[in-house]
Image (cartoon, rainbow, N blue to C red; front, side, top):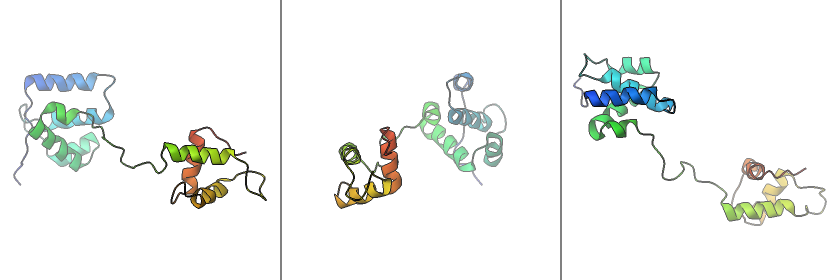
Length: 152
């Protein structure tokens, strides 16, 4: 099978990779990418196949492929950089206004026939008041815990 992407590190790039590996603040992910590039480098010796690199670095062969591809297409800095999401992968269920209304409800007096609020009771009441269209008990519990609000 013909390889589509190659890694040929220049002397300056190789030096940068070694410096990055030796920094204490370098994350494990970036260190693994550095090791992948060093093992895949064709300028020093015959490179190792991707499966072997994956075994040595403790990553999947897809990670090796993407690291080599990113280096080939975008350069060393892009291949090593830590990626940041523009928005979180999972959008929060409860926003700030809804959170405030939940806290206000939890701080209010419980309904007739109950001595205190329970998480189940709060969840039921939140949906009845249409603060949130649908919400689970765990989300209510986490929201209250985040704000150090104890129902007991």
